[in-house]
Length: 348
Image 1 (spheres, helix red, strand yellow):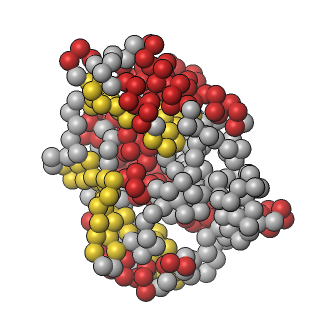
Image 2: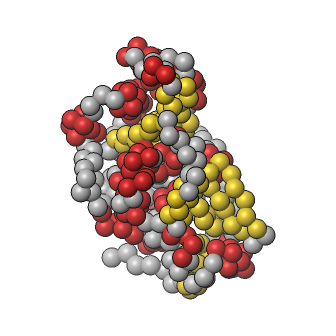
Image 3: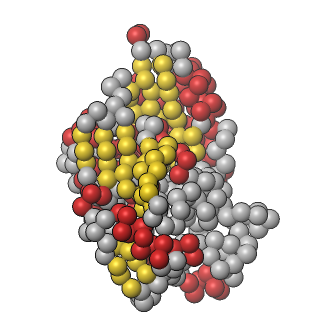
């Protein structure tokens, strides 16, 4: 049985107080980490991937659990994924986000896991996500305690993969995030939160707390999220595709965003593919052209389930499915048979 290491627990009542605690405890060295749902951090601590001496609990901060309607939508980072799935407005107006949240893990984990936690999800790798003893036996990897990336030993950077579900969906929807630190707050595009580095995959400072996700209204947009995994529940994605389009008269695409997940150390926007859709209808030929363009930048590594060559090849197919979904094709049977998605009214 793997047990948690010893730690102290602090319980702030505001995001600023949490940021001050993180700064005071030496968060820049990983001595203190924020804890919300704990579905990612606590297993990591049991595997000794992260060993903070202090956990700054965020569950007592009521403002982080806000779901505020208005001109757009403000989502507190402490909202559970279940809360998102049960929101009629999220389901109706930000469908891609709803589909992403609904496919994270299992109902039990969605009831604990939070939106902010999923956005800040640690990068994953077959050589990293093992017990301390297993990693020690092969010699530790670059991401924790070692100097070599065992996925690509010649690589100078860690190639652990981003496996967050909600980030690609929110990137496709043009989301922004608010961060609170000891010296104040800042708002930035969600895309700016990520770096393509398996170790330093977040640009968020160690003493900052992610407090909100901000979405502008988009009445003419359609969005969807497709997730590929071995099992129909629990599994992290081996590939995900988030797509959003704004349609004008005659169903001509006026704007489009495509984002890939699990093919790099950060969610990967593919603006070149989206640009191919603009000014055109979503015909089969146009969809195939954009799907081929989206597959080009995808460079999956041999660090998750399935072979990297198959994961690379299937990108084009899944992007095509997502775009046909946005066109209005009935994709439900394909989701069930191939992507193993069951999205129904009764989902928890």
